[in-house]
Structure formats: structure tokens, C-alpha cells
Image (cartoon, rainbow, N blue to C red; front, side):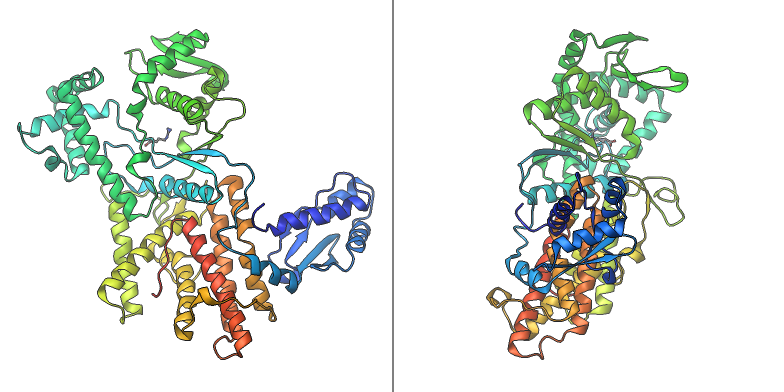
Length: 575
Ligand code: ARG
């Protein structure tokens, strides 16, 4: 352990005391307590242990607290039917806050290689609102794991292959004159896509040409391949501009497209065949595994080669598992993909395991997420039922934030206002996403996410600016503060404790990659700061108290800043 994990420390202390009290396999079950009158933490495991060992719970609780006695760092108190309430003594917090730094607040343990498959839009179209979740959730996982010193491989498994490219390429070919710059035809990808699919649906001759283009593309016809490369290039540039605007850490180097696995596909099928895993069904090559049953208990096939000889989505994913396992040597692979693809991924993992593409120690894990809905609970679409472009949503966020900033603070220059609006608008969207439970649907609501009150990015960013302005007002350079922090008031003790709980929040997040745990942590931290700020005067105090409180404010600012950075959210100096 690098930083201090208070919960874990208490777990060990209480478990040890339970053992001394005669409990064989003690589990302390330490929880952070939500209400301060219950102390800072609570041990909930006493009752279960007492029952198992035939003790009345309060008797065991008494034994345990007697053993712990008058502890130097914590005070213990029996509560309710057999809980132990735990309070951290100020001296313990003071000592640890002195050593605290946001750069060491990570668990060390063994360094893992973790592949994160996220964002992965289909390049035939523009990115739409539906891509927000995978992109933001995956990016957070990448940032947090990296901050814990793991090796992260970002894998943007974009869809750049398949039948849908037939009509796009046929249409592109049709509208470009020889020698003309192709990208000029692709300034609006969405419109281009719509025109091509309209033609495909309405014009039989065009549809036949489009099908020929699929075959041509698959057989590496030079002209067709050239058009395809151009098209993919423009589409990837578009994605990159969305990532940049959204402050997503993906780069073009992280793209490992579906087409990158083309040459592996026959190899995959051959291996499955050699392992006698394949069965032919209606001309298609399939793997039937007992664990997959469809309606009426009918066996459900995992199709790896279609009857027309083409390879489906699943085959590419099998090739990707092999690459991630054998070439990248991943300890863990996280798939940040919508809940609707659950069966697909279960099949991928099961077939890959049966074929030996994945080693027994390697963890392949689906992190599903729900839908983004409109206020009326309906799917997020435009009035005519089309997908809402992600770039439009991002621009709207910035516009709305700019309006709010202008209302709030007219003394900033136009340029500064714009910068702040970007940070606040984009932060609001990302935080609204990350502060929800990952697995359920959520309602996209501009007013709530951009509010300066409540569990929102603007509230946290604002708390940060309050601290920064404190330093401007006192003309103190925070890096020159070296005095110890001394904690007198309840509000200071609680704020310092919140800061120390960062590592606990990070570790709780890593259990199931639920970013709302990190968001709630940051929200509690900001609230604790606000109440400290209200109750504890700073600049008007004597030198020593002032220096201590400034120090505490500074470590809070650093924690807010690095906590938000884990979510890919920026801060500003004033707003
Ligand atoms: N491109 C896919 C889609 O838009 C998502 C890919 C997810 N990753 C994967 N390895 N299948 O649905």
C-alpha cells in the first residue's frame, strides 16, 4: 500500500481484536458512516461473528473494545445491538495529512496490464450521443488505472469494415470526378451517410452496385480500397476532434480497427476447426456451447463464418481476444460496451476460452451500461427520429455554460469566459454521466448538470475556485506553506479526514468501475470544504491558525483537482 487506506487499517485492527476475543475467522466489516454522530466509521461484523460463536453481540463488542482499550489513534464506542463506532483522533489525522500527497494516494500491489476496449464507434456514421457513455466511462477507467501505476492499453475497436461500407463507397465513387479531392465530399458525414442509404433503399441498380463494392473491398480492389482508406481517414479525424473537445485521452494510435484483424479471421476458424469446436449449420460455421440456449432450450450458435463466406462481428472479436491475450499479454481486458451486447460478449469470452485464446488467469470482463434518455423517458433522438450528433451536444454544452458564466461574472475577458465555458460545459456532461450508476439508464437534463448547486461538476469546480481565490487574496504561494496542519474545530477534522479518504474511494471504484463512487467522494469533499469555509475563519486569524487552515485548503484543492482529473474533468482558476 502506498497511501493510507483507513478502512483497511481499521479492518485489520478490529479483526485482530476479535481474534484475541476468541473469534476464529473474524470479519470486521468496516463501513464509512454516513452520519457523524455514529463516528467516522462503524464495524458491522460483530453481530454476525457473535451469533456464530454463541456470544450475545454486545458482550463481544464489549470484549473487543476492552482489548483495544484507550487507543492512541482511534476511539471506540459500542452502539446499538452490537456495532462499534470508531472515531479517528485529531492527532492521527494531523499526522497522516502531513504525509498526504495526491501523487502517492494510489495502491501499489502488482502492476497489471489492462486493456480497455472503449468508445469504438462505427466509422460509417458520425459519433452520436450513444457513444458518450462508453467513451467517458472507459476513459475514466484508463485514467484511474494509470494513476495506480498499472499499464493501460487503450483499444478503440472502431467498426470500419462490413457490408455498410458498400453503399458508402459506391456513392463516394459516383459523386467524385477523377482528380477531385475526396475529403471535400465528406464535410458532413452524417448527410453523406443518409444520402447513400436513401439511394440504397430506393434505387435497385445502386443497391446492386453497392453489393459489388462490398465484394470488391473484401478482395482488395485498389480503387475501392483507396476510397475506403480516404473515407476512414476523414471519419477518424472527426472522432479525434470529438475526443479532443471532450478531453478524452484517446489518440489515433489507440485505434485498432475491426479491419486490423482481417488476416487473422481464417486462422481463427482453422484453430476452431482443429479443436473440433465447429459445426456446420445451414451452411454457416458455428460453435455450439452447452451454456448458450435459445428459445425452447434450442442450442444457440455462435457463428464464426457465414454461409456466404463472410466473417461476422463475433469472428473479429474472437481474433481480438487472441491478440489481447497472446500479443499484449493482458492480465485484464475490460469491455466498456452497452448492455445490449451482453450475450454477444458472453459468447465471445466463452468460445475464446474453449479455444484456448484466453489463459485461465486472464480476466475478460464486460462493463455494461444503460441508455441515455430524454426527460420524457424516451430514447435520445432528434424530432425526426435520427441520432443526435455528439459534437452538437458538446457545442450546446459550451454555449449554455457560456451564458451562465456571463451572467455570473462579467469581469472576465471574452477569451477567459470562453475557456471557462468549455471546461464547465464539458465537465458538466462528463460528470452527469459518471455520477450515475453505470448499469442503469439515465435522463439527460441540461439544467441539473449545469447547476452550481448539488452533486455536479460546476459545484466542484466552483469549490476549487473558492480555494484558489483565497490564495490570491492572501497573496500566499501554496507551495511555500510548510507549517504543520493543526486540527481544532470539528469542520477541520472532518475536512482533513475527507482528504485522506481519497485512496479508499479509488479502491472502492476499482472493485466494479462505478465512477459514481468517486463522484460522491468528491462531492462530500467539496461539501466538507464549504462547511469548513463557513465555520472556520482563515485570513483574519493569527499567523499560526491562518497558515494551518491555508495548508488544509490547499491540500483540499489539490485533491479536488486530481480527483476531477481522474474523471477527465478540468478545473479553472476563477469562474
Ligand atoms: N463498434 C461496436 C458498436 O458500435 C462496438 C464495439 C465494442 N467492442 C467490441 N470489441 N465488440 O456497436
